[in-house]
Length: 121
Length: 312
Image (cartoon, rainbow over all chains, first blue to last red; front, side, top):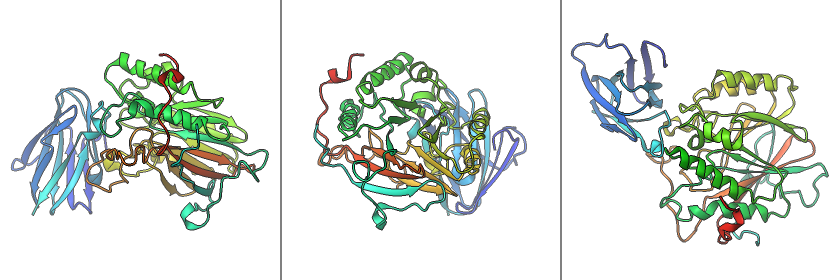
């Protein structure tokens, strides 16, 4: 998916829909924006909570080096470059928990650099 | 050193390519035939994986000794293998470039004590992902290569020097040019670190462009892949290709997606070294049947003094 200006991914199992984009434009004004920072070896917040049916935009930035933001269940895999904002649009259809993790090896704690998208009813 | 008490005689008879994989538990197992009944042209090699030299932590309070224990266990085999292959994560990662090289020197000094005449190496992400394989190449040579041994073609694929866990187009092109001269029925063994297939992408147990390698390898009928990374024995097929993950020599990890998070299984003082071990792979004279034997380090005695591994 990397390299596209827009990303469309869907997971039936997760019942979520995701749109990701590097370009800052194209998001509806009413969509909630959630800032997510990535640094060795954690995402903040590590748990991203949504309500079922809600659409949010994740604005992901790196505080130190190149990381990755991968949500395999949603077929999302984005590079998080320092100095850039990577935007991923998520629409939650129904309740569920979707894991995400850093997909660029970043050191001795890389395996623990992970989090969850928790969609509440 | 005596035969390890905990050695597990879990023998699996399998064929390359299209032969059905048969579990030892399904009644299709056989005793290893090297010592009696094997053909004169049989040979075997040993796979060691994920030694993570330099690791310190509760999942393995004996980490400073485990590699030496493995060397001693392999040296104690009734026969020595034709070669030993290390399928990555020779060292545990460190940001300190000098420390990284020190760990590689220490690793080399210890495995220099192996009796087997030849060792083959490849990197894991802990060895290579922070510097794109630079330190590894300095100490162990190329990160991808091929060689032939007694009628089998072996190809080593690097899916870790790219920190995103990809093989890359250039290496895929190399693999194609390397394999292209081989007939469709040629026996081929692939060594790599990460699984080439999507075993558990949620736990980063995959290769980003592994499907390209698998699509390429499918053109040959007798392909077997041995890999590491997941710190446990695992067997899987993609089409005609058999994939076998090895135990680690540092700490075991849980079965794929068996719990919410990937985390090392805790050290069990009642069963030290449980889940750690290595693999013997015997090849019959037809070159089309491989026999796997999983050896455990559980029950292996304490390592000999460090001097056995030489000085650093």
